[in-house]
Image 1 (cartoon, rainbow, N blue to C red):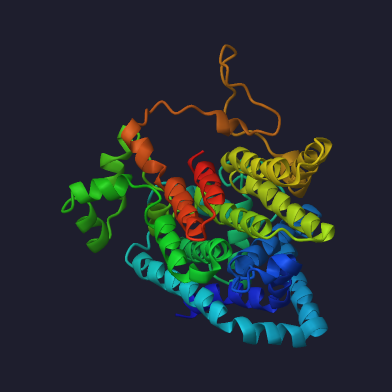
Image 2: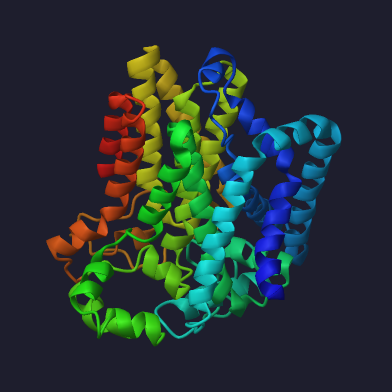
Length: 455
Protein backbone atom coordinates (compact mmCIF):
# COMPACT_ATOMS: atom_id res chain seq x y z
CA UNK A 1 0.00 0.00 0.00
CA UNK A 2 2.86 2.38 0.76
CA UNK A 3 4.34 1.78 -2.69
CA UNK A 4 0.94 2.35 -4.31
CA UNK A 5 0.62 5.72 -2.60
CA UNK A 6 4.26 6.67 -3.10
CA UNK A 7 4.42 6.09 -6.86
CA UNK A 8 1.21 7.87 -7.77
CA UNK A 9 1.59 10.40 -4.97
CA UNK A 10 5.11 11.52 -5.88
CA UNK A 11 4.12 12.33 -9.48
CA UNK A 12 0.86 13.94 -8.33
CA UNK A 13 2.63 16.07 -5.70
CA UNK A 14 5.18 17.26 -8.23
CA UNK A 15 2.37 18.20 -10.61
CA UNK A 16 0.30 20.00 -7.98
CA UNK A 17 3.34 21.95 -6.83
CA UNK A 18 3.34 23.33 -10.36
CA UNK A 19 -0.37 24.18 -10.27
CA UNK A 20 0.33 27.81 -11.29
CA UNK A 21 1.65 26.41 -14.59
CA UNK A 22 -1.66 24.63 -15.09
CA UNK A 23 -3.50 27.89 -14.53
CA UNK A 24 -1.22 29.63 -17.00
CA UNK A 25 -2.38 27.28 -19.74
CA UNK A 26 -5.91 28.56 -19.21
CA UNK A 27 -4.84 31.91 -20.63
CA UNK A 28 -3.67 30.54 -23.97
CA UNK A 29 -7.09 31.57 -25.31
CA UNK A 30 -7.94 35.23 -24.82
CA UNK A 31 -10.44 37.82 -25.90
CA UNK A 32 -13.47 36.96 -28.01
CA UNK A 33 -12.36 33.39 -28.64
CA UNK A 34 -12.34 32.68 -24.92
CA UNK A 35 -15.66 34.43 -24.32
CA UNK A 36 -17.28 32.19 -26.92
CA UNK A 37 -16.13 29.10 -25.00
CA UNK A 38 -17.18 29.73 -21.38
CA UNK A 39 -17.45 26.00 -20.62
CA UNK A 40 -13.90 25.12 -21.65
CA UNK A 41 -13.27 23.85 -18.13
CA UNK A 42 -10.26 21.68 -18.79
CA UNK A 43 -7.67 24.47 -19.05
CA UNK A 44 -5.06 21.89 -19.99
CA UNK A 45 -5.12 20.26 -16.56
CA UNK A 46 -5.47 16.79 -18.05
CA UNK A 47 -1.94 16.89 -19.46
CA UNK A 48 -0.41 18.81 -16.54
CA UNK A 49 0.82 15.74 -14.65
CA UNK A 50 2.19 14.26 -17.86
CA UNK A 51 3.99 17.45 -18.91
CA UNK A 52 5.55 18.01 -15.48
CA UNK A 53 6.74 14.40 -15.37
CA UNK A 54 8.19 14.53 -18.90
CA UNK A 55 9.89 17.90 -18.36
CA UNK A 56 11.42 16.70 -15.08
CA UNK A 57 12.80 13.57 -16.76
CA UNK A 58 14.07 15.59 -19.71
CA UNK A 59 15.83 18.07 -17.39
CA UNK A 60 17.46 15.24 -15.43
CA UNK A 61 18.69 13.79 -18.73
CA UNK A 62 20.27 17.09 -19.77
CA UNK A 63 21.83 17.48 -16.31
CA UNK A 64 23.33 14.00 -16.64
CA UNK A 65 24.65 14.92 -20.08
CA UNK A 66 26.30 17.94 -18.44
CA UNK A 67 28.05 15.65 -15.95
CA UNK A 68 25.74 15.77 -12.90
CA UNK A 69 25.84 11.98 -12.56
CA UNK A 70 23.66 10.37 -9.88
CA UNK A 71 22.57 13.80 -8.60
CA UNK A 72 20.81 14.59 -11.91
CA UNK A 73 17.50 13.04 -10.80
CA UNK A 74 17.37 14.88 -7.48
CA UNK A 75 18.51 18.17 -9.00
CA UNK A 76 15.81 18.03 -11.69
CA UNK A 77 13.09 17.26 -9.13
CA UNK A 78 14.32 20.08 -6.87
CA UNK A 79 14.37 22.47 -9.81
CA UNK A 80 10.74 21.68 -10.63
CA UNK A 81 9.81 22.11 -6.95
CA UNK A 82 11.51 25.51 -6.90
CA UNK A 83 9.73 26.58 -10.10
CA UNK A 84 6.39 25.49 -8.68
CA UNK A 85 7.08 27.14 -5.33
CA UNK A 86 8.02 30.38 -7.04
CA UNK A 87 4.76 30.23 -9.01
CA UNK A 88 2.71 29.76 -5.84
CA UNK A 89 4.55 32.58 -4.06
CA UNK A 90 4.12 34.97 -6.99
CA UNK A 91 0.48 34.25 -7.83
CA UNK A 92 -1.10 32.28 -5.00
CA UNK A 93 -4.29 34.40 -4.77
CA UNK A 94 -5.17 33.98 -8.43
CA UNK A 95 -4.22 30.29 -8.28
CA UNK A 96 -6.53 29.62 -5.34
CA UNK A 97 -9.32 31.53 -7.08
CA UNK A 98 -8.81 29.44 -10.21
CA UNK A 99 -8.81 26.27 -8.10
CA UNK A 100 -12.13 27.19 -6.48
CA UNK A 101 -13.64 27.82 -9.91
CA UNK A 102 -12.45 24.58 -11.53
CA UNK A 103 -12.43 22.17 -8.58
CA UNK A 104 -15.20 19.98 -10.04
CA UNK A 105 -13.28 19.42 -13.23
CA UNK A 106 -10.02 18.81 -11.36
CA UNK A 107 -11.84 16.30 -9.16
CA UNK A 108 -13.06 14.49 -12.29
CA UNK A 109 -9.51 14.43 -13.69
CA UNK A 110 -8.00 13.08 -10.48
CA UNK A 111 -10.77 10.53 -9.89
CA UNK A 112 -10.49 9.17 -13.42
CA UNK A 113 -6.69 8.90 -13.26
CA UNK A 114 -6.72 7.24 -9.84
CA UNK A 115 -9.46 4.80 -10.88
CA UNK A 116 -7.50 3.70 -13.98
CA UNK A 117 -4.31 3.40 -11.91
CA UNK A 118 -5.91 1.27 -9.16
CA UNK A 119 -7.86 -0.90 -11.62
CA UNK A 120 -4.73 -1.85 -13.55
CA UNK A 121 -2.81 -2.37 -10.31
CA UNK A 122 -5.49 -4.80 -9.18
CA UNK A 123 -4.94 -6.85 -12.32
CA UNK A 124 -1.16 -6.52 -12.20
CA UNK A 125 -1.25 -7.90 -8.68
CA UNK A 126 -2.33 -11.23 -10.18
CA UNK A 127 0.33 -11.21 -12.90
CA UNK A 128 3.29 -9.57 -11.18
CA UNK A 129 5.95 -11.45 -13.12
CA UNK A 130 9.08 -10.39 -15.01
CA UNK A 131 9.21 -13.43 -17.27
CA UNK A 132 7.55 -12.48 -20.55
CA UNK A 133 8.49 -10.82 -23.84
CA UNK A 134 10.94 -7.90 -23.38
CA UNK A 135 10.65 -7.19 -19.65
CA UNK A 136 14.21 -8.37 -19.05
CA UNK A 137 15.45 -5.93 -21.68
CA UNK A 138 13.47 -2.99 -20.38
CA UNK A 139 14.46 -3.61 -16.77
CA UNK A 140 18.10 -3.97 -17.77
CA UNK A 141 17.94 -0.54 -19.45
CA UNK A 142 16.27 1.05 -16.41
CA UNK A 143 18.74 -0.53 -14.00
CA UNK A 144 21.68 0.63 -16.12
CA UNK A 145 20.35 4.19 -16.07
CA UNK A 146 19.68 4.10 -12.34
CA UNK A 147 23.10 2.70 -11.48
CA UNK A 148 25.08 4.89 -13.87
CA UNK A 149 23.07 7.84 -15.23
CA UNK A 150 25.36 8.82 -18.09
CA UNK A 151 24.53 9.90 -21.65
CA UNK A 152 24.40 7.48 -23.33
CA UNK A 153 23.79 4.94 -20.55
CA UNK A 154 26.03 1.87 -20.38
CA UNK A 155 24.95 -1.26 -22.16
CA UNK A 156 23.76 -3.85 -19.65
CA UNK A 157 25.09 -6.82 -21.67
CA UNK A 158 28.28 -5.50 -23.26
CA UNK A 159 30.42 -3.92 -20.57
CA UNK A 160 32.19 -0.75 -21.62
CA UNK A 161 29.88 -0.16 -24.60
CA UNK A 162 27.13 2.49 -24.81
CA UNK A 163 23.46 1.62 -24.98
CA UNK A 164 22.33 1.80 -28.62
CA UNK A 165 18.60 2.16 -28.11
CA UNK A 166 15.99 4.93 -27.81
CA UNK A 167 16.00 5.04 -24.04
CA UNK A 168 14.60 8.40 -22.88
CA UNK A 169 11.27 6.87 -21.82
CA UNK A 170 13.17 4.34 -19.70
CA UNK A 171 15.17 7.25 -18.29
CA UNK A 172 11.92 8.81 -17.06
CA UNK A 173 10.97 5.54 -15.39
CA UNK A 174 14.37 5.51 -13.70
CA UNK A 175 13.53 9.02 -12.46
CA UNK A 176 10.23 7.68 -11.09
CA UNK A 177 12.15 4.99 -9.24
CA UNK A 178 14.57 7.54 -7.81
CA UNK A 179 12.03 10.10 -6.57
CA UNK A 180 9.60 7.50 -5.18
CA UNK A 181 12.37 5.25 -3.79
CA UNK A 182 10.71 2.29 -5.49
CA UNK A 183 13.03 -0.60 -6.47
CA UNK A 184 13.39 -0.64 -10.27
CA UNK A 185 12.15 -4.24 -10.57
CA UNK A 186 8.83 -3.20 -9.02
CA UNK A 187 8.24 -0.85 -11.93
CA UNK A 188 6.92 -3.91 -13.79
CA UNK A 189 3.86 -3.60 -11.55
CA UNK A 190 3.51 0.16 -11.15
CA UNK A 191 4.78 1.84 -14.32
CA UNK A 192 2.15 0.89 -16.90
CA UNK A 193 -0.82 1.65 -14.60
CA UNK A 194 0.65 5.13 -14.10
CA UNK A 195 1.14 5.56 -17.86
CA UNK A 196 -2.44 4.46 -18.48
CA UNK A 197 -3.73 6.95 -15.91
CA UNK A 198 -1.84 9.82 -17.57
CA UNK A 199 -3.13 8.74 -21.00
CA UNK A 200 -6.71 8.74 -19.68
CA UNK A 201 -6.28 12.24 -18.27
CA UNK A 202 -4.82 13.47 -21.57
CA UNK A 203 -7.92 12.16 -23.33
CA UNK A 204 -10.00 14.42 -21.09
CA UNK A 205 -8.03 17.48 -22.23
CA UNK A 206 -8.54 16.59 -25.90
CA UNK A 207 -12.26 15.94 -25.58
CA UNK A 208 -12.93 18.86 -23.20
CA UNK A 209 -11.28 21.15 -25.73
CA UNK A 210 -13.29 19.84 -28.66
CA UNK A 211 -16.65 19.54 -26.89
CA UNK A 212 -16.65 21.40 -23.55
CA UNK A 213 -20.40 21.07 -23.01
CA UNK A 214 -20.44 17.25 -22.78
CA UNK A 215 -16.80 16.38 -22.25
CA UNK A 216 -17.29 13.92 -19.39
CA UNK A 217 -19.25 11.30 -21.31
CA UNK A 218 -17.12 11.71 -24.44
CA UNK A 219 -13.95 11.49 -22.33
CA UNK A 220 -15.00 8.18 -20.82
CA UNK A 221 -15.72 6.85 -24.31
CA UNK A 222 -12.35 8.05 -25.59
CA UNK A 223 -10.53 6.45 -22.63
CA UNK A 224 -12.31 3.16 -23.27
CA UNK A 225 -11.47 3.23 -26.96
CA UNK A 226 -7.84 4.12 -26.29
CA UNK A 227 -6.98 1.71 -23.49
CA UNK A 228 -9.23 -1.24 -24.37
CA UNK A 229 -9.88 -1.23 -28.12
CA UNK A 230 -6.46 -0.23 -29.41
CA UNK A 231 -5.76 -3.56 -31.05
CA UNK A 232 -8.71 -5.86 -31.54
CA UNK A 233 -6.69 -8.94 -32.42
CA UNK A 234 -6.56 -10.36 -28.91
CA UNK A 235 -10.15 -9.25 -28.26
CA UNK A 236 -11.54 -11.00 -31.33
CA UNK A 237 -9.33 -14.05 -30.84
CA UNK A 238 -10.34 -14.24 -27.19
CA UNK A 239 -14.04 -14.06 -27.97
CA UNK A 240 -13.66 -16.88 -30.46
CA UNK A 241 -11.67 -19.03 -28.02
CA UNK A 242 -13.00 -17.98 -24.62
CA UNK A 243 -12.12 -21.05 -22.49
CA UNK A 244 -8.56 -21.34 -23.81
CA UNK A 245 -7.79 -17.62 -24.04
CA UNK A 246 -9.60 -15.10 -21.88
CA UNK A 247 -10.65 -17.47 -19.13
CA UNK A 248 -7.08 -18.62 -18.68
CA UNK A 249 -5.73 -15.09 -19.12
CA UNK A 250 -7.95 -13.23 -16.70
CA UNK A 251 -8.74 -15.86 -14.10
CA UNK A 252 -5.56 -17.92 -14.04
CA UNK A 253 -3.05 -15.09 -14.60
CA UNK A 254 -1.55 -16.61 -17.77
CA UNK A 255 -1.73 -13.86 -20.37
CA UNK A 256 1.45 -14.63 -22.33
CA UNK A 257 0.99 -18.28 -23.32
CA UNK A 258 -2.15 -18.09 -25.48
CA UNK A 259 -0.97 -14.89 -27.17
CA UNK A 260 2.50 -16.13 -27.97
CA UNK A 261 1.31 -19.59 -29.00
CA UNK A 262 -1.60 -18.56 -31.22
CA UNK A 263 -1.09 -14.99 -32.39
CA UNK A 264 2.58 -14.05 -32.47
CA UNK A 265 3.83 -16.86 -34.79
CA UNK A 266 1.30 -15.80 -37.43
CA UNK A 267 2.36 -12.16 -37.47
CA UNK A 268 -0.68 -10.74 -35.68
CA UNK A 269 -0.26 -7.30 -34.10
CA UNK A 270 -1.88 -7.84 -30.73
CA UNK A 271 -0.02 -6.28 -27.83
CA UNK A 272 -0.64 -2.54 -28.08
CA UNK A 273 -1.86 -0.87 -26.00
CA UNK A 274 -4.23 -2.93 -23.84
CA UNK A 275 -2.18 -6.12 -23.59
CA UNK A 276 1.03 -4.12 -23.07
CA UNK A 277 -0.57 -2.29 -20.15
CA UNK A 278 -1.95 -5.49 -18.64
CA UNK A 279 1.38 -7.23 -19.15
CA UNK A 280 3.40 -4.48 -17.53
CA UNK A 281 5.39 -4.24 -20.76
CA UNK A 282 7.56 -1.10 -20.55
CA UNK A 283 8.42 -1.12 -24.23
CA UNK A 284 9.19 2.06 -26.13
CA UNK A 285 5.93 2.00 -28.09
CA UNK A 286 3.96 2.05 -24.82
CA UNK A 287 6.17 4.74 -23.27
CA UNK A 288 5.69 6.97 -26.32
CA UNK A 289 1.88 6.90 -26.23
CA UNK A 290 1.46 9.61 -23.54
CA UNK A 291 3.67 11.97 -25.54
CA UNK A 292 1.53 11.49 -28.64
CA UNK A 293 -1.59 12.35 -26.65
CA UNK A 294 0.08 15.41 -25.12
CA UNK A 295 0.97 16.71 -28.59
CA UNK A 296 -2.60 16.11 -29.83
CA UNK A 297 -3.96 17.92 -26.77
CA UNK A 298 -1.75 20.95 -27.37
CA UNK A 299 -2.72 21.10 -31.05
CA UNK A 300 -6.42 20.78 -30.23
CA UNK A 301 -6.25 23.56 -27.62
CA UNK A 302 -4.22 25.81 -29.86
CA UNK A 303 -6.34 25.57 -32.99
CA UNK A 304 -9.80 25.29 -31.45
CA UNK A 305 -9.40 28.89 -30.23
CA UNK A 306 -6.12 30.36 -31.53
CA UNK A 307 -4.36 32.75 -29.13
CA UNK A 308 -4.20 36.37 -30.13
CA UNK A 309 -0.70 37.00 -28.84
CA UNK A 310 2.31 36.10 -30.96
CA UNK A 311 4.40 35.27 -27.89
CA UNK A 312 1.87 32.71 -26.65
CA UNK A 313 1.66 31.15 -30.10
CA UNK A 314 5.45 30.84 -30.13
CA UNK A 315 5.45 29.24 -26.65
CA UNK A 316 2.88 26.61 -27.68
CA UNK A 317 4.75 25.86 -30.91
CA UNK A 318 8.09 25.55 -29.09
CA UNK A 319 6.58 23.25 -26.45
CA UNK A 320 4.97 21.07 -29.13
CA UNK A 321 8.23 20.89 -31.11
CA UNK A 322 10.12 19.93 -27.95
CA UNK A 323 7.66 17.13 -27.15
CA UNK A 324 7.86 15.81 -30.72
CA UNK A 325 11.66 15.83 -30.47
CA UNK A 326 11.59 14.11 -27.08
CA UNK A 327 9.36 11.47 -28.64
CA UNK A 328 12.20 10.68 -31.07
CA UNK A 329 14.42 9.65 -28.15
CA UNK A 330 11.56 7.78 -26.45
CA UNK A 331 10.35 5.80 -29.47
CA UNK A 332 11.99 6.74 -32.76
CA UNK A 333 9.32 4.93 -34.77
CA UNK A 334 6.73 7.53 -33.80
CA UNK A 335 8.82 10.56 -34.77
CA UNK A 336 8.24 10.65 -38.58
CA UNK A 337 4.43 10.27 -38.51
CA UNK A 338 3.99 12.58 -35.50
CA UNK A 339 6.22 15.26 -37.05
CA UNK A 340 4.36 14.96 -40.37
CA UNK A 341 1.01 15.23 -38.58
CA UNK A 342 2.02 18.39 -36.69
CA UNK A 343 3.39 20.08 -39.78
CA UNK A 344 0.28 19.07 -41.77
CA UNK A 345 -1.98 20.69 -39.16
CA UNK A 346 0.07 23.90 -39.13
CA UNK A 347 0.28 24.10 -42.91
CA UNK A 348 -3.44 23.44 -43.31
CA UNK A 349 -4.21 26.24 -40.85
CA UNK A 350 -2.00 28.73 -42.70
CA UNK A 351 -3.35 27.74 -46.09
CA UNK A 352 -7.04 27.52 -45.12
CA UNK A 353 -7.37 30.20 -42.41
CA UNK A 354 -4.56 32.74 -42.47
CA UNK A 355 -3.43 32.46 -46.11
CA UNK A 356 0.02 33.76 -45.22
CA UNK A 357 3.00 34.04 -47.61
CA UNK A 358 4.77 30.75 -48.26
CA UNK A 359 7.96 31.83 -46.49
CA UNK A 360 6.22 31.82 -43.08
CA UNK A 361 5.24 28.13 -43.02
CA UNK A 362 8.61 27.21 -44.53
CA UNK A 363 10.42 29.12 -41.80
CA UNK A 364 8.14 27.60 -39.16
CA UNK A 365 8.86 24.09 -40.47
CA UNK A 366 12.62 24.64 -40.26
CA UNK A 367 12.36 26.07 -36.72
CA UNK A 368 9.95 23.34 -35.59
CA UNK A 369 12.26 20.54 -36.72
CA UNK A 370 15.32 22.38 -35.41
CA UNK A 371 13.87 22.92 -31.92
CA UNK A 372 12.82 19.28 -31.68
CA UNK A 373 16.25 17.98 -32.69
CA UNK A 374 18.02 20.50 -30.44
CA UNK A 375 15.95 19.25 -27.50
CA UNK A 376 17.53 15.80 -27.90
CA UNK A 377 20.99 16.87 -29.05
CA UNK A 378 22.78 14.56 -26.54
CA UNK A 379 20.88 11.59 -27.97
CA UNK A 380 21.66 12.44 -31.60
CA UNK A 381 25.33 13.03 -30.86
CA UNK A 382 25.79 9.76 -28.95
CA UNK A 383 23.41 7.30 -30.64
CA UNK A 384 24.70 4.28 -32.55
CA UNK A 385 22.26 2.34 -34.76
CA UNK A 386 21.52 -1.04 -33.20
CA UNK A 387 20.61 -2.91 -36.37
CA UNK A 388 22.99 -4.10 -39.08
CA UNK A 389 22.85 -2.06 -42.28
CA UNK A 390 20.73 -3.49 -45.11
CA UNK A 391 22.46 -5.13 -48.07
CA UNK A 392 23.92 -2.81 -50.67
CA UNK A 393 21.26 -3.76 -53.21
CA UNK A 394 18.43 -2.96 -50.80
CA UNK A 395 16.45 0.25 -51.20
CA UNK A 396 16.13 0.58 -47.42
CA UNK A 397 19.34 2.44 -46.69
CA UNK A 398 19.77 4.40 -43.43
CA UNK A 399 18.89 8.08 -43.69
CA UNK A 400 20.28 10.97 -41.61
CA UNK A 401 18.72 11.17 -38.12
CA UNK A 402 16.85 7.87 -38.61
CA UNK A 403 18.09 4.91 -36.50
CA UNK A 404 18.94 1.82 -38.46
CA UNK A 405 16.56 -0.18 -36.30
CA UNK A 406 13.64 1.54 -37.98
CA UNK A 407 14.62 -0.10 -41.25
CA UNK A 408 14.49 -3.71 -40.05
CA UNK A 409 12.07 -5.69 -42.18
CA UNK A 410 10.21 -8.43 -40.33
CA UNK A 411 10.18 -11.80 -42.13
CA UNK A 412 6.82 -12.61 -40.51
CA UNK A 413 3.94 -11.42 -42.67
CA UNK A 414 0.92 -9.78 -41.06
CA UNK A 415 -2.48 -10.87 -42.49
CA UNK A 416 -4.70 -8.10 -43.81
CA UNK A 417 -7.45 -8.77 -41.28
CA UNK A 418 -4.94 -8.55 -38.43
CA UNK A 419 -3.65 -5.24 -39.77
CA UNK A 420 -7.19 -3.83 -40.01
CA UNK A 421 -7.92 -4.91 -36.44
CA UNK A 422 -4.62 -3.48 -35.22
CA UNK A 423 -5.39 0.04 -36.50
CA UNK A 424 -8.63 0.26 -34.54
CA UNK A 425 -7.00 2.77 -32.19
CA UNK A 426 -6.49 5.70 -34.63
CA UNK A 427 -9.77 5.00 -36.40
CA UNK A 428 -11.82 5.01 -33.21
CA UNK A 429 -9.99 7.92 -31.59
CA UNK A 430 -10.51 9.97 -34.74
CA UNK A 431 -14.13 8.86 -34.80
CA UNK A 432 -14.69 9.93 -31.19
CA UNK A 433 -13.13 13.32 -31.85
CA UNK A 434 -15.12 13.72 -35.06
CA UNK A 435 -18.40 12.82 -33.35
CA UNK A 436 -17.69 15.28 -30.58
CA UNK A 437 -17.07 18.00 -33.14
CA UNK A 438 -20.10 17.04 -35.19
CA UNK A 439 -22.18 17.50 -32.07
CA UNK A 440 -21.06 21.14 -32.24
CA UNK A 441 -22.15 21.21 -35.93
CA UNK A 442 -18.60 21.83 -37.07
CA UNK A 443 -18.49 19.11 -39.72
CA UNK A 444 -15.36 20.43 -41.46
CA UNK A 445 -13.19 20.07 -38.34
CA UNK A 446 -14.77 16.70 -37.67
CA UNK A 447 -13.90 15.49 -41.16
CA UNK A 448 -10.35 16.85 -40.83
CA UNK A 449 -9.74 15.01 -37.55
CA UNK A 450 -11.23 11.79 -38.90
CA UNK A 451 -9.10 11.98 -42.05
CA UNK A 452 -5.96 12.71 -40.02
CA UNK A 453 -6.66 9.77 -37.72
CA UNK A 454 -7.23 7.40 -40.63
CA UNK A 455 -4.01 8.62 -42.27
